[in-house]
Each structure stands twice: as C-alpha cells, then as structure tokens.
Image 1 (spheres, one colour):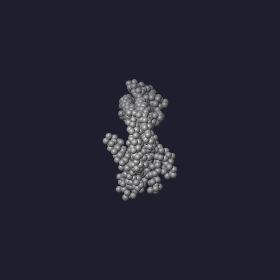
Image 2 (image 1 turned 90 degrees about the horizontal axis):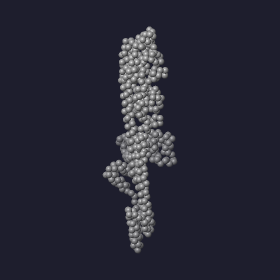
Image 3 (image 1 turned 135 degrees about the vertical axis):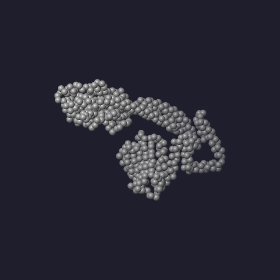
Image 4 (image 1 turned 180 degrees about the vertical axis):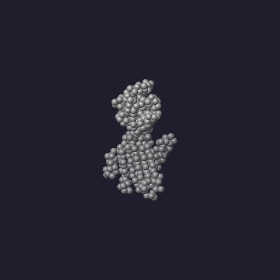
Length: 583
C-alpha cells in the first residue's frame, strides 16, 4: 500500500508537474530565441536600408559622370607634352568636389586606355596587371554597376568597397572604367552599434564592413565560421560555429542599376540569448523540485505510519489464518484502521464462539471441512474468463470517456483490442488487415506513452489487405523499432510501416529514424538470429520472426536489417503470396 501511495503521488503529481515545468522551460527558451531572431531580422533590414541609402550617393555620382563632357575631354585628348596634361588635370576638379561634398566618398578613379595620360591617383592608364583583375574584366562586360571589395597591396586606397562601372564614349569609340571607393568609416559606423556580430560581404565573399573592423578585407572562408555562405540565399539558418550553436540571418541587397550586390550577415550564439531564460527557468525548476521532494517526504511519512499499523494488523490476520484464535490486535486509533482493528477482535471472538458451538457435533464439523475444501478447490480451479477481462476494460473505457478522459479511453480501447487479437490468434494464418490492426493498436498505446517523442505511419496497398500471412510477424519488428529507436534519442522518432505487393510477393518494411547502431553491433544482432545462443531480451521477438519465416518459406525469406548510427534502422522481409489469397 505504501508503494502504491508513493507511486500514485509520483505518477499523478510529480511527473505531470515536472513535465509542465520542462515544457515551460522549453517554451521560455524558444520565445527568447524567436524574439532575438525577430530583432536581428529587423536590425538586418535596417542595415540593408541604410546601406542602400549610402550606396545611392556613389550611384548618382557615377550616373552624372557617365555624361560629363569635361571627363570626356580629359580622357580622350591625346596630349603632346606634360604641360598640356598638367593643365588639363588642374582644370578638372570634379572628382575633388565630389569627395569634399559627400562624406560617403573616399576616392574616385578613372582607368583609361589613353596612353598619353599619367597616373595622378585620379586618372590611371590601364596596364597589363589591371587588365587581368576580375573587377576590371567584369566592368568591361557592360555599363551596369558592380560592387566589389578591391584589394591592392601596393595602394591601400583601393582596399575598400568600390563601385566599378564602365563609362563608354561612343563618339570616340573608347571607354574607361570608373572606380568610386566608399568611405570605410561610414560602412563600419553603421554596424558598430549592432548587438550581434554583423558584417557585409560582396559576391566574391570579401567582408567589406563589419562590427569587428579586423574582419574587413578577409573572406568569409578565411574567417572559418563553419558555415557555407556561398550557396545560401536570404533566410535564417542554424549552424555550429566554434563549437557553439548559433543562428545566422542572411539578407541580400541589390542596389539600383547594379549587376552585382551585397550580402548582409548577422551571427549570434544561441546560448547567449537563452542563458537568461535558462537561469530563470532553472531557479523555478529547482523551487518546484524542492516543493515536490518535501511533499514526497511528507507522503512517505504518512504512508509509513499507515502501513506500519496495517502491517501489524496483517500479522494478526496471518496468525488467525494459521488457527490461532486467541489473537487480540493492539492497533489503536480513531480512524478506519482503528475501527478495523476493533472489528477484527470482535470477529475473532465470534469465530471462536462459533467453533466452540460446532465442536459438539463432529458430523457438522466434517461437513464444514468438506465444504471448505470444496470451495478452496473450486477457487483454485477457477480462471479469469477472458470475457470478464474485456468487459472490465470496456467498463474502464466508458467510465474514462464519460469523465472526458478521451485519451485514456482510446488507449484502453486499443489495449482491449490488442489483447483480444492476441487471444484470438491461433497457430495458423491471419490476414494482413488484422495484423496491421494489431500494429496500429500497439503504436497507439506507445504514442500515448511517449507523446510527441513518437510519430508513426502505417501504409499498405489496398489489394494486399486480404493476403494471408503468419500471425505476429510485423508487430515484434514495430515493437523493436519503438523500444530501440527511442533509446538514447531526445528528438522525436518516426516509425513507418510500409507493405506493398510486388510481383506476387508481399514486401514489408519497418523503418525508424531513431538511434541506429554501429556496423559491428548490426552484425552481432544479425548473427543472433541464426546462432544457437540465447539472444538478448530485446531481440527475442525478431529472432522468433526470422526463424518462423525461414522455416515456413525458406532461408531466402528471413528478415534483413540495415542501420546507421544516429540515422535509424530498417528491417524488411518478403513473403510469397498466392494470388487467390488476396483480392
């Protein structure tokens, strides 16, 4: 009784409270994470807007320079001496005015094929090295705008995000490449106040701006973030970065009139977001656990007091059962146990008086003994009627249904159905439909037990449902998938049963995405199917199915297994089915 009280407390109070507490912890953690993701998405969208506004300035400048007559004249004039060239450079001050007028602009350069020009860091003749750069080649493919991080170890002014664009001069049948460098401080300034690690990268993977300025100029591959950004489009991703779980927000920016764009990336650690929620949840969980433990101690003490008195009363009952009618119980108290003790004393006294009365007549005594022996024999010979068991289960189900416990009612119905099928199954054959009904009943009960940790699916060809198969050849495989699939597996596990007809054969597969097993372990399990030694407890059913199939149909029709550790297990078998056995 004491164990029942403790068990009832654990099942009815302790486990539900712990489950609710665990669910609340998961909920708070998920809410904190979703809030951080939403905030980061908004921040990334804000950075995207700010960056677009910043890049509009060099875009507008490039549009003006496309039709600048003074630029046309300087670039396409063939100069006979340095005096003429110096005078032309001195008179052209548009680049300087743009730099002074817009803080977003750091430098403006024009690369020309005019060999009479001299490099003054604004007008630069194109040499062989420049021709071979990827950004120069891309610029010559059209007049669209390109955005690249240009690296030049010899000229630090080029080490920054730059607008690259071809400027054609149709009347001279020439062209050049305009390069407008963006001020690095303006780019980094947008990201400096971001709460998480945020960066902007071009299509080549170069980081053009970042919250951490040390990242600028390095490629995403060089940063070794453990995440392939190359094939990832706009969205939210989860990854392992430096051994920690992290969330990555990726957005794309394609400025107006641009052929290539930029990618905005924000990375934050999951632990840093949920640590506060975890701490609060842990404190609450510890408080709940302390209350539950205190209540458990109190229940244990009360149950101990009750069971100790019942134990004493039971000893007195055993003494009476052994024929000692002089027993007088000493269990005190004003509760039901005390009343039971007093009634027991009166009962013993009454029995003693009755036995004194019947002692006078041996015939009556003999009849009484014969009657008692007959009753004992009948009690020993009687067995529980299966109909009584099913009726009792049905009464329990109806009582649970009337009280609104639909889940319990459904599981009791499934249990009764499963037990009835097991009793009805003989040594012959059963139909696939009936076998699958047992499987669904079993999975329904296990679903009630494990909840969201277990999902299942049973699929069968309609034409195969009337096929005759040996009984209990699928259910043990499903039971094995549930028991071992959920073993050491915290994530939800899906068990799928698939039966299909193929060329006069019934092909059955039981698959799960549970814990799986190593190759050596799989070989050991397969060897136990045919070995003489007794298999481990969890594999007896599978061995029984394998041996029955091979005995009835031949060695080629035994079960086959495949498994990978951490990915799941697949068990299948094929049975020959006569055409007249199914519709």
